[in-house]
Image (cartoon, rainbow, N blue to C red):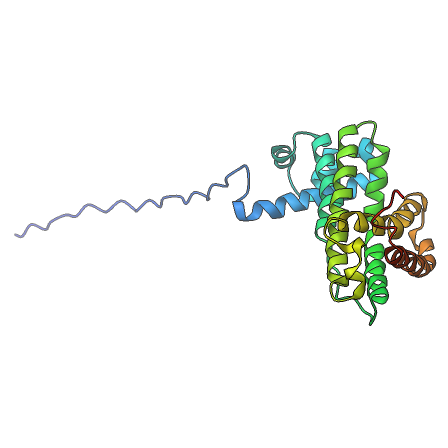
Length: 242
């Protein structure tokens, strides 16, 4: 009689439950942080323009940006800080980023007219003017911001004007005039902008429909450039106080 070996049945294997990957809270990876910041600022800009500073809320900005409130507050202390960054970015940074196509025209007057027209149309963007109106309206609440933006915008615009005038006149007899000497060029650039840009910019701040200014722009630029060039040739630009 043989004895058979009894085998105990094996216990079924237990499957280890797969745990879902943990999602880390907080700031996104460094390479995405810039995109998140830009999305928040773009959304805040839109809400501020629609609601004004007082009417805008972080809740609405959060929804428009598709970002949590914690994400916003991790970057901006409060609504005031967010408004300050929006105004600073959209007025100052945009000036520094301005790029003009190669100017058209055979004469320096034609090239100046081409660049001045591009600059003016670029500056009279509806959202940019709207944000400037808002910054002016909130100057009592943000006095330091208003003063800083005014000074920095003027300085950046002058730097831009110096660059444009130097490029446009270096191969022309106009560039040999005293007004375009390195020591006089910042004053010359500032006067060029005061003649071309400032009058229409002030008009735009009070004009509800900016399209109403379009028929006047070409004539304004043509008259302004002619006046500016005549002034350079007569010598008054380098001695504006005489």
